[in-house]
Length: 503
RNA sequence: GGCCCCAUCGUCUAGAGGCCUAGGACACCACCCUCUCAAGGUGGAGACACGGGUUCGAACCCCGUUGGGGCUGCCA
Image (cartoon, rainbow, N blue to C red; front, side, top):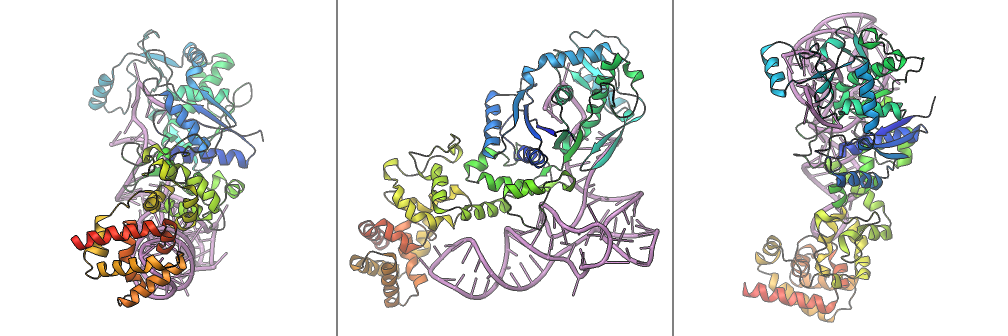
């Protein structure tokens, strides 16, 4: 078996889609598993929709996910001569014809007649090539089979395929053509891509064979025999593998417009690349043994296209989040501190790849108030409480802000609606003035304060927590108090007491 | 409309004719743990779309129905 060569071929028309991530991952897994080559090819033939920044986005997202290409990025925009040459070849051999039908004209005729798709109106008009769109003359008879590793053999009757356009009237090649020329040139052995491309596979095969036949001696469409491209200089067809699409909760294909699909967004939200990669691997495939949280090496060792599922998979952010939480908890504290830096440290927040979580903004505290040593003490406490890194600032902000952000509902629940809250705050204030300043001692003191007020600790700590942190929920209270320091805790208790008494 | 794909708990899946009284995970519910919230632990509820075949035997094979989806652009 020759060295497998696979390619991931996105077009740079927007943020990096999680579905693209899954496709890239499966290509990468296949290449790694089989000692193959993973190629990145940017399909930027649509100059109106492509933007250079999105190319950078693709490269960065792949690097972030740990899916760096072995070759590339190649760019279709730099290979125009290859496509022109292929178009010349096909035109000279009679596979193509020029068409000047407008979209409206095609649509009108389709509505009036029974022919689905393009009706071949220009087939025999002998229009000049220059200035016209070029259509491929599809065979009127026979069938084209797509050999798919996941779905088996899919058969398309040739007479159900319309004469599709391969080049625009301005001479630019279209996806179907450029894609095939590249796959041939780059000796691609396995085309692993989304299921939505399955209907274009028979067209690809038609072009592929036409190119073979023309190269062999310009047999022309009439002389193009059926069967596989065989020996005699023909380029062997690749094997296809069409992955199930990713869908939203309405079971529709994930859309950039409606659904949260940008990998960059998940990165900014604090999903770890290894977690996202692991989750994506599970969408359409599962490693043996039933384990779900699996190191990438195990993924590689077990991956097989034959085992990929056939049906669409729902991208479940809840499950992703759970898995992300597991990955976060697996980190050592030092690793956790390092990786959460982009979300908490206003000064050194640029991450290893050079990015910052722009979409979630900088930490809410001023740079000079962030204290790495203080954060380190809180880190193990927050590490086990978050599912994403972007949640971390909300758990520690009370330490780094001058005053806690007072959540109105929390205040009402723990202080405003609690007649005994003021007295308890007062008692805590006096106890905390004296107590040895450690989490254990603070806890004991608070238990005592609670007992004197006839409260269990759970009820006693609530007003204190809100007074000091601004919320009813957060990291363990007594460690938080210890870190904040006596002076600051007393100041906040006093402020809350004042507010509670004045209403 | 045409072509094509798909069909196991709400979701992701295990299951390749007897190991299935259908397993796991997320979500959900209850309980335990507990200073809040999480995490963790224990338990619970929850599925083979339907109808025909084939077979001694079908979630697994075949056919049909129904349902869902994709494509149907001078986008990719």
